[in-house]
Every structure is written in C-alpha cells, then in structure tokens.
Image (cartoon, rainbow, N blue to C red; front, side, top):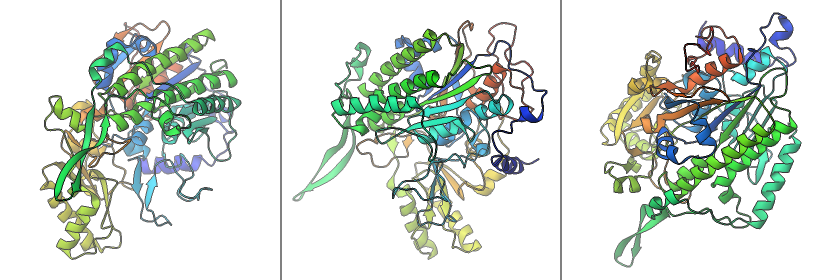
Length: 568
C-alpha cells in the first residue's frame, strides 16, 4: 500500500467516533507492559540545539541535570532539511519524517485556496473563517499520521492524551487529532480549540498570569557564568542619510538583556523565561485536575516550551538573554519534576527539540566565524520574480511564491506548462549563480530520490531535502543556502536570528530519556527524533506492526537486557 493511500485511509478514520476504539472491536488486546510508566511525558524545547545543551550542560543543577543523568543521546537529529517548528514537532510523537507527516514547513503556498492570501499555516483550517478578522481557525487537520497518544488511546481507551505549549502548532503536532485536551499561549493566556471546554486548571493558570501582567515583574539576576556573555552587539545596520552624509546606526542592540517586565507587556512575558514556567505550571495543574498517571493505563502528556525559540529569534543564542533563559528553564523543570515526585506518580520523560538554532551573524563574525552572513535580499522571491520575469517576458508579479530566500518555492499557477518549465530552469540557473546558494532541487528530482537511510549526519543535501518533501504540498523547487548564511536578510526588534537550514547546527538536538531507577548511559552516535515514538511505544508495551514508524526503537537498558522487546 502506498503512503498516499495510507494517509487517505487515516484521514477517513478521523470521521469515526472516538468511542469505537480498537479494543472494543477486538477484545484480545495486550495490556500495557507490567512495568510501564503510568505517565509518559514528552518535552520539546523549541530551538534547543545540541550545541546549547553541550555549552550549558555543566551549569545545569535542576531538571536538566536530572535528565542528563538518564539515557543521553547528545547527537539526535531532526534529519530533514526544513528545520522549522511545525515540521520538527510533527516528527516527535509520530515517529515519521515530514515527507510522511505532510508538514513540510510552518507555512506553504496552496494556490487553490479560496482566498486572496494563498499562504497556508500548518496549524490552521483554511476552509474556515475566524471570528476575528486577520485570525485563523487552529486545526491539526494537515497532519497526515497519528501521534503516539492517539495510538495509545485507540488500544487503551482509558488513557489520556493531553498537550500544552507556548505555540498552537507545537501542541497540536505533538497531541494529534484525537486528543482529550490541548492548550497553547495566545495573547495574554492559554486557549484551546474552538468549541472545546477548558479545564479548571487553565482558568487558574490564566488568573496567575493576569496578576503578573498587572503588576509587572523585576529583571532576573545574572548568574555568575553569564557574565562573559554580557556585551552589547548590534544586529544589522540601517543606512541613514543626514543632509549629504550617509551614516550607519544600529538597527537592534542585543546581548545584555535581563527580562524586566513592564506592567501589561504580554509580548515581553512571552519572550522571556516566564512563558516556560507558565506552561510547566499549567502542565502540573492538569496532572492534578485530570488525575494523570493514576489510571489503569498509561497517559501521555506532551509539553512544548517555546521561550528558548522566542529568545533565540529576538536576541540570538550567545547573549545574557539566552544564558538567563537556560538557567531559568533548568530551574523550572526541576520544580515541575519535584511536584510530580511529591504526588508519587510513576512517570517517564523524554526531552528533545524541534530544531536547533544559529546565533546572529554579527556576533558570530566577532567570534571566529567570519563567513557568517545574512542572506542577500536578491534571493527574496520578489527580487527573483523581477529578474526572471524580465528575462522571460513574463508578468513578474507573484511569479515565485516563497516565505523567504530559502526553502520551498512555488511558481505562479497561471503559467503554461512550457512557461513554468522555463521559469524553473531560469530561476535555478540564476540562483546557482548566486554566491550564497548551496543547491537548488526541483520537485521532480526530489520525487525521484529514494527516502534516505543510514546515519543522518552522512546524508547528502538532496537526501535531507527529500525527507521534507511531500509532493501535494511542497514547492516546485527548493533552495538551500550555504553553511553560515542566515535566511534573514534584515533583522529587527524581536527577530535578529533564525533557523531552518539543512546544516547540523539546525538539525542536531539532544534526546534525553529519564525514569526513576533507569541506569544512566550516554550514546554519542547519531540517532533521530523519529526514534522517540517507537522507543516510547516499547516502553509502555504498545505493539505496533512493522512500518508503523520511520524511526527505530532505542534500547534504554544499559545492560544486556532490552526495553525494545519485539519492537523493530
């Protein structure tokens, strides 16, 4: 059976009522493993690269230190090229790469949608109109495969599947379609899907956030080891003409922040360590209100922590801002685990990331990476459209559709077949002549490339791009920039650095498993984030047929035994 056929059958199955689980149709269902944890907690730290984990590992004393005393895989890989939040989160609890989850980017272009804006957000239902103009209806409908929480519920209906995050796309991609509760940060508090009823714990958490926003909050103290990062750096320069003289002034200055919060500043709350603590506080409230970890079958709690990503984008990865964030995150995780310990819950944890990150080029150039640079605005779709439109005598308006200077690119659909072929060929030749471009692959080339196998650090660029390619949504060609070139031409307040490249600083993330009594070990050889779901499935005793996952089960037994059982 082809994957497209499997995806169609899965989509059709979503129409079935959740009250018709497999266990009700087939009474011979294997129970959970006798030693299965009663609560499986999957934690994703947005933009937490393997580089950051290595850099701060010796300074962790709280929750991160606990997890580093478990089964540690410091070279996990989001092995695909589209290292963005939505694709990355889609791999974690499905065990499938974006080529199979269908989540090829945070946003793609669908020129068939019945609206002027053809950009489709990965976590929206573009067929519906939001109640508020400019908003969208959040949905997980674009995800083509089930999550682990969904698979567990289908076999053991008493299990709960709950997700909470600082971003809707993170919570929805980890939780999936059949989910008991899902919450994410929006505006000034946590919200859920339209029509769903929020838990009492959400109201309590939002009330606590409102109190903080009303009063404001002082700056964080600077940990001693953060002092070396306390230096202002200009992110980008803006040409300013005064009379006949052109001077340069800093567009943004970052590197010395302490996250003081003014009263009413919800944006500042979100881009600070306070957001992650609020998400973890809400998760702990849901453990209590929903009785997680106390039922006869394993529950799944997915938590995505977004502040590291907001801070990485807004300040880069090497200033006081990130240093404070990681210290505060370590402490917040420690407090969260302590609350679970106090309740006597038998829980197991996996922690990883949806992608890595790269510091802002201006600071990288000062710190021994002179080749770091921002993408040339000539690579942006509008500039490319102008050049190729003039070359081929085509209307340049919207000739190429893309989110930025790299990633998927779509050709305007009103072109004839010959015009489209000529436009793709001309764009490819143009882009490959640009000094910052590493590769350009067409959709036909990607479709003809076998799905990569073997260790992900050895994959070629086209193999990395293939792992992100899903023909019904992917562009007509994909552009990959050279290592050290950041796909952000012009920085500004709140956005000085980004990720999304096919290079290992964006692909490589830590993967940490912990459970009380688990013998610690470290495996430095590369593994993949798609290995997480089959590993957790085996941990709880969920039997799955071959081919269920792109990944493999990781044996968490440090001795001659195995935690994988019959899992592949």
